[in-house]
Amino acid sequence: MHLSRQIEPLYRELAAVLRAEVQLLAPGDYLPGEIQLAARFAVNRHTLRRAVDELVLEGRLLRQQGKGTRVLARPLIYPVEAGSAYSDSLSALGHRVEAQLLERRQRTATQEECQHLQLSAAADVLELSTLRLLDGQPVSLIRHRFCASRVALLAAYRGGSLRHYLAERDLPLTRTFSLIGARLPSRDEAARLLMPQHAPLLSVLTLSRDMAGRPVELALSTSRADRFQYQVAP
Image: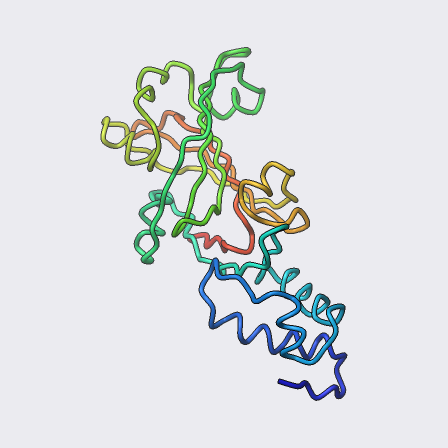
């Protein structure tokens, strides 16, 4: 296949062709190798790389050193509502949702955590760190903070939806506060989420309360911005 080499720079014309083709591939698929693609389009490898760079910056592709260039999924709309649960909302869209427990630790609460969870100064919190996957692909890291008095209640949690786990133990939660922000990922976050370090993360700080209005959980989720769009209910 030969490109026209007219008007637009050649790499942008090639990027447009690749953009259309990538939409026909499944998330997780790999592009053919650089030599194969350059030969197919009759361009040099520098031009091909510039075209691929365009799609990497758009969040459509991810370069993985030693593995190749991988197709990323398009953004999902996640409703931020009082009673919405991550697993339920995305499962309803037909996705397989998993939550892996990465770490469990007890530590001294920060000033912000004491304020939101209504704890005394220097109180302890239990922090559970989880990795969320959609259809087998990592998309979010979540740090769940609870008053240390909940240690026994959460002792049996090994993964899966924390909302479901707590509801099954007669502690249903309702989201009462959400603060949405954005930042660049750390090296560890980028590695866990299979994303480039120059791409932004979406962060959501959420406070959830029990049926009596008492604060129970302060959660901070960091998600790949190329995978999520948050829809806030009026």
